[in-house]
Image (cartoon, one colour):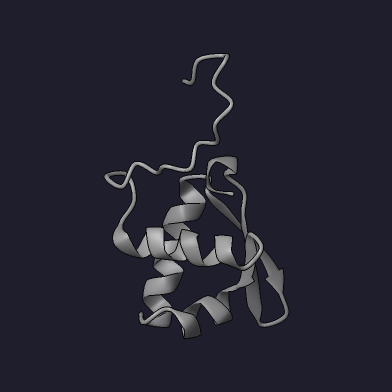
Length: 84
């Protein structure tokens, strides 16, 4: 918890809580306006579609992202304000 007088943004992430792939996905979504299509994430990051899907499920379970169905893919939205 931050002291009440601290107005700096919390941009640091506990890297022990996230895998390298999760951190890479978070950073990619951040640089794309905090939302991105799952299919675009899969083509941008050098990892299999299955691996991206598992990573997004993990991030979703941690409350960092939500998936919104959009046609044949999902729109991934960064929800955790500490990452925005």
